[in-house]
Length: 224
Image 1: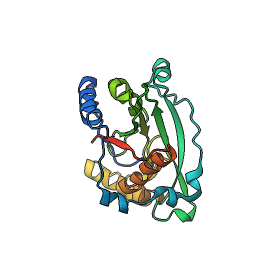
Image 2: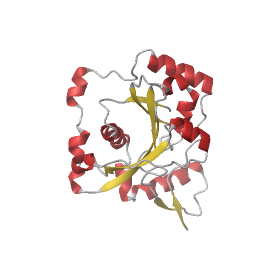
Image 3: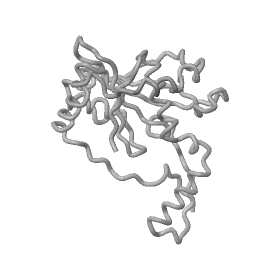
Image 4: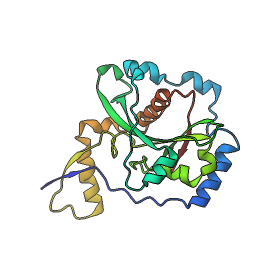
């Protein structure tokens, strides 16, 4: 019998309490003014996603209401929350083949006059939707949201981005977690998009989001 599946099951994430999150973010980001301090040598060898993306680097983002079920209209207005779709190469190692996929992003706007840049957030998983994490972080850490636009996103293959859909065949004997997982893996391995749903490809997407937002660098907060 055949059933559609999005791949192996994921454990539920547990959100950190808002007070702890706020204290951690303010200490880690505001005190230093940045969440990342890459070495100069590393910067020299980083891929140029703007050049790799070619004409995609000229796309204009169209911001619209996110319509997230867990964000009230009042919070959406207060945070100036909006969402947009980014077109990225399907394979950053061969962007010239013309194949593209979509990555959906969300943004809250820095509330203060002393804006320092963007903070891109990712819920981890891997495979977790991150659109609602941006308003969650902005609400939980207002001192941080005063200085940074908080950027959330659904990584490639997830949620409102181009999804990874696997066709999985289960046998009557697939009754244990191990056997079910093996069936899921076999089904997803036969899906063409699977080879492009990787941490490396997602990292390129993240840098390209920075490019399209017109930022020199991005600050990053990731969960696991």
